[in-house]
Length: 468
Image 1 (spheres, helix red, strand yellow):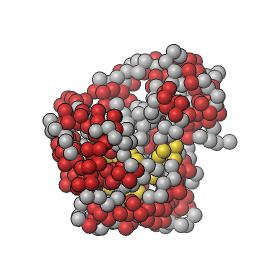
Image 2 (image 1 turned 135 degrees about the horizontal axis):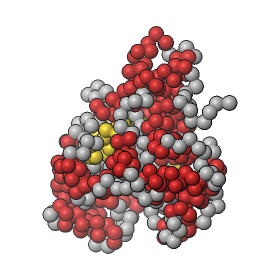
Image 3 (image 1 turned 90 degrees about the vertical axis):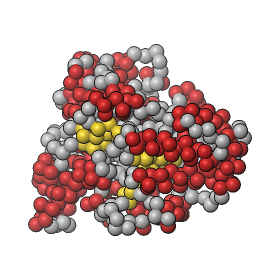
Image 4 (image 1 turned 90 degrees about the horizontal axis):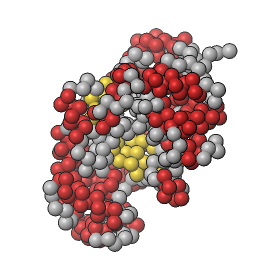
């Protein structure tokens, strides 16, 4: 019987093992999309316990605990200690078999803490105490954990009104890992709540120094902040929404819509979509002018559980896949930019696997020979960053595009130990390609090129494509 998470975990053939151990395993990590808190990096934060490290912000684990019948007190509650929460997580872990959390949990124990034991209620206290003790030492600080995985660069997710003071201080200090901001202007598009929108616009006006009285002023303020982000090293933008927006609009219409929502009036759905279309387009033009890469995460429907949203807030594990009709609006959005030569390098992430072929073929419509893989079908995201989701994305991209130009994996995580997801991805990638060679679907005679392909997808493509 094969050992769990041994040296050849997931690698089913000799060729897969060769590709991983020779060409992928030891490469550095480019984590080009994550949700790490840059303040924790700047302070070189030390986590007090494994409970804090694992359970303070991980909505993946929270969802599993709820599904296992754990009371919310031990999930997002404020009264339970981290040990009490961890004890409930350890109770849940055995029931996560065949969920990626089971693999991730034990990969992190093994790679970060050198622990081979299976986490369950019997081993919980021993594992908790050993890991918590290690976390108090300097090599297990926030920066120490990043260095442990040979992390070369991370791109955090930041709002246009963020000061970026932590990114600036890290750069000034000369911290060897690049910690770069990513421009995420979602709140500038969030017109569904006029009151919150006005508060945000006033904050943007204050920090940009530009009085915002109309849509043109808004774009001027965003452009000024965009310039500031570039000065701190930003090279990527990111957008998270349910669907693409590409409605036709006029300048007068958008100014009227902006005035209406800023003055506290609810918008019609048609007005919402026109406004979002305008902001999305103008932002994409800015990105192109600076040579940034734009990222689009679409297909999520958020905060579905109203009662729990009121109790626990956003990002607490109550989001899911949506099923919007996006093909025409996505095509129109990219074509509108391409027609004026303002379509920059792009990564598209779909949350619903139904759209895999849609995204792969859409990307092919706008490849133009200027940059290899200019339009990227992004890696499996959120609910799809598990084994079958990763396999589907790799296979679908291979069938309809160029896997060889793929920029590979990211963590999309708030955790400093989620870098094992890069290992998980690399093993799955090597297993797919290695199995193809063993089955005669790819030539064994081209193993040197195949090895370079694995290295490129694991590391070099992201480094070169994103200029990190």
